[in-house]
Image 1: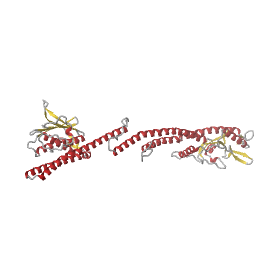
Image 2: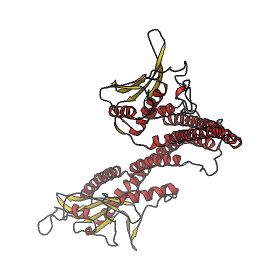
Image 3: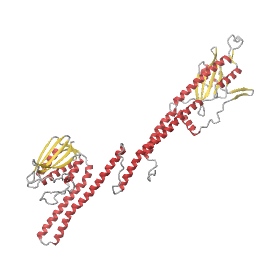
Image 4: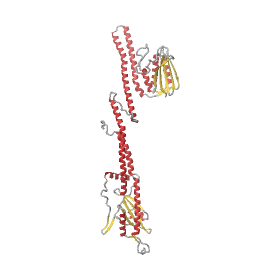
Length: 543
């Protein structure tokens, strides 16, 4: 699979998933490889086995390798004299140690703490010779894995809470004082100890008293290396590592699969977004992941909706720009015609009439540009403005009072306000006032001379509903939705062209929908079905 330029072969999200999963698995395996309690149980079992053997050896030596003095078992002082027969002791110690198998060493100390027999020492005419079993030819090898496990074992011994075993030291002339367990045995009780060698190995030793007729004649010490324990720990750790290798492979595969199910769709979404950002047509679309019932599917759907909304907004901007150009062109054309004609006309009355047309067109342009400016700023202002508590009832009363006291037509319509209930909402007060100003102004422009405008405000089922009824000619059939479009104009007969920009109701709808409400229009009809006026209804969520 080729990767886009600048994109790593392994995505960051893949690395994070792998790191978390593998780290958790490594911590678990590290804890299993520790095996501290298992090691202690093996040491205890090995020491107990050595104790049993030492007791058997001590019993055999007490019966077969002790000289009790004269034939009657008494010395010159009349007591019992018991001592080891050295030649017999040496032979028995070597044979007994050999019977236990390679690796076990037997040492015998007399009651004075002097070493009198050692299974690894041979007595000859030239003195003592030490013998020791050589390791197998392949011992000491094992490769990198063995070395790593040995290092790990040494590290675990230094963990907090692990009491390090004393170092095993063997002097040239051994005596009982060198070994605490031997001193314990000479006192009549079995003793045991576990020590470390300089190479990181272990030496286990047990000492038991050698007795005859309840007299302690010496101490039998059996010692053995920790090779069997190390081998057992090594086997267990190897088994754990085998399971770890399988678990690691499964973890990596599942992590890669998981990351690909997340990263690849995200890469496709990002690439599609980049194509749309740099493109100028609608052929580039966001991939469809609706089949995924997860967050990525929701993200893809949201991105598609956002993209469609952006296209619609761009279309609206293009249409708005085209409408603005068209609306501005009409008064400019009228201005140009009036100016060209005024230059050629010599009659003062005609010039005055043309100047009136120019002045009217300038006012019309000013009004149109002001409304366009307000509409263009509306989106940004609505997105930034903060909402607060608004008393809609008080606002409507103020607007009605202002309309009634403002100078205007002599035959201006009568405003009636009927409001009931708690009319408080959460919104932008200035923009909501603009909504009802536009609605009242629109109704006034359509209402016949001497007519009335009725405004009713009610709180109902969590909504505030404000209806505005006029006595005008009503809404053309099928135009109930179109009147909220920008630059829509369908004026009554006799009204001068250009008095209204056609943006008022469009701005009202945008403000109301920003507040989570709706605005609708319909015709009022009498019992006979005749149109007697129009009704605009604004519904806002109660706050």
